[in-house]
Amino acid sequence: MEQVIKQTKVNGVDVGQLETTIDAIQQTPEIAKFTFRATNKWISGGHNRSTIKEFYGAGQEDATRTEPFELDADEPPVLLGSDNGANPAEFILHSLASCLTTSLVYHAAARGIKIEGVESKLEGDIDLHGFLGLSKDVRKGYQNINVKFQVKSDADPELLRELCNQSPVFDIVSNPVPVTVSVETV
Image (cartoon, rainbow, N blue to C red; front, side):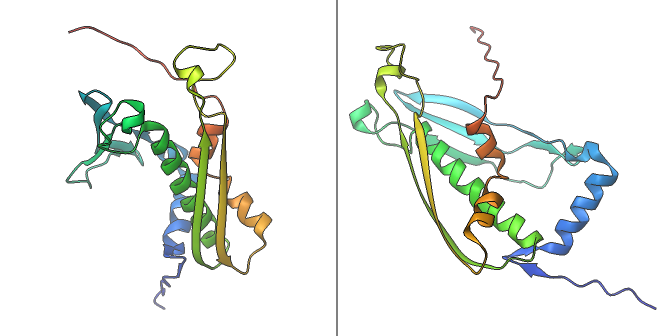
């Protein structure tokens, strides 16, 4: 008797492939380790450009991306920039919003929870006294970030919030991550 493979998509996620991936990771835990990379080059003033292409995952270097992603960052004029892109702190909001959304959608799909729409609004508060070194009592980064979701679904809002909290970027911005910086002159 032939085995019938049923492809089911929930929220645009291939749940069969998701289950296959989870099974593979349970069988071979080392394939769960990923290393993402970015390079960055300063252009002028606050303007710089990051290039993202290669990464290591599933036990090998990825070869599927043929073109890199380029992300320009700058500052608005009020922060002495030329507004050639979102500023780095705004990119953090984008990263958080997109990862929370992806985590919500993927985890909901895995549980068979249908979602018809997701929108979010994020606000983060920064006090330049910290960045400029004018006060040791003020942190350099966000003092807080508020995220408000509107989700079109029959699921319990508290369950949906818990699914969002599975986000790797939520973990990154909520918990200290060791970061090593080295500088060499050329």
